[in-house]
Length: 194
Length: 194
DNA sequence: TCGATTGACAGACCGACAGTCGGTCTGAAA
DNA sequence: TTTCAGACCGACTGTCGGTCTGTCAATCGA
Image 1 (spheres, rainbow over the protein chains, first blue to last red):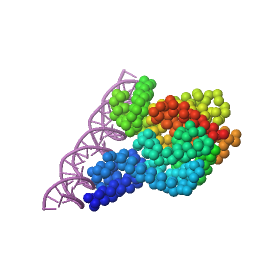
Image 2: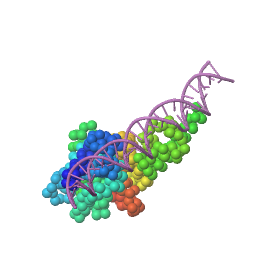
Image 3: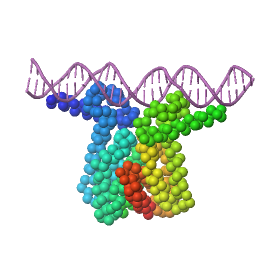
Image 4: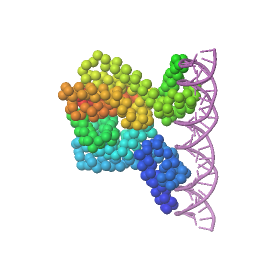
């Protein structure tokens, strides 16, 4: 079954590629399964063989994104040791990446509504949020913030940074807004962890 | 046309009442026009006479909520003069109200996805965000924060407070999380505006 | 007073869409 | 060569948002 398996993998990836483009440009609701089939040239049966439904296809696309975003962010903080420095760098890196309209639409706009806030946050939990908590925990150990606030602060920082990213992406002048937002977020984190 | 107009208004309000309950419990996608018709006992023609479409019905429901939320928040800050005090009180009042699951589902989860982030923020712009900016502007005038950061900070605070509200609402122990979140948000705002 | 007009409402109908299902094809293994 | 698992096919179904052609009662103008 070597040849067949390879064919299946290729088809599945093709679905994800095409769906990514369509979801990004037309949104989840604005993208019909029909359109995905037409662009891939595959059949309905093929798609539903690989994915249980439209939502599962979206989830696959989303996870694809998260993998890439996390990899790039890890690159940015490589070699750093100071928790606050790490947090600041990671946040700025994330804002930069969120400038990508595809990330905007899929990760920040559609994902919470399609999956529901809870499941969406559980995905983050395993990745970004967990890291944030670790870094803030380290900051608390250094006496920079109160131990009791670590958990909530992690959420607040995450939400703030996402908001900054949206702000940049939807700005009429993204470049200008980017530096503005980065300045503000840096100041914001400085005050939070002073 | 006095009698007819009154009947129309009553019907319209009935639609909004029923739609509010259904949107809140089953979400936007999970609520069919058919279900709204069945619960109201009205006809499709009637609904589409009063609203151009499902999205417009949702918008009407949303605006209904915003009016109530703003009124309650204004009550909470009545008589206050210190901008920082106002901001803190308003934020805590909002978190309290966002504990309401109806507010959660409609205002925080569905609204951004249904209307799109841009339009959603434009609604806020006229209300909450504008107030935040005013208060932060006052804080800047007092030298508490940099004038340049007022705009971005307003967004970050708004996003943070919304996140705190979600955190409370989705918590397995909302009462405990509420005090925890309020403590953290207060500290958060203190640091931001110190 | 009575036809004209207007706005509220009715419900049959349409097209699009997500998802299902019985069947076919391919290629690896026995 | 036969067998079989898994990839793939496409007609079909149920649901849903939205449209369209009316009907009816309330008001207005002559």
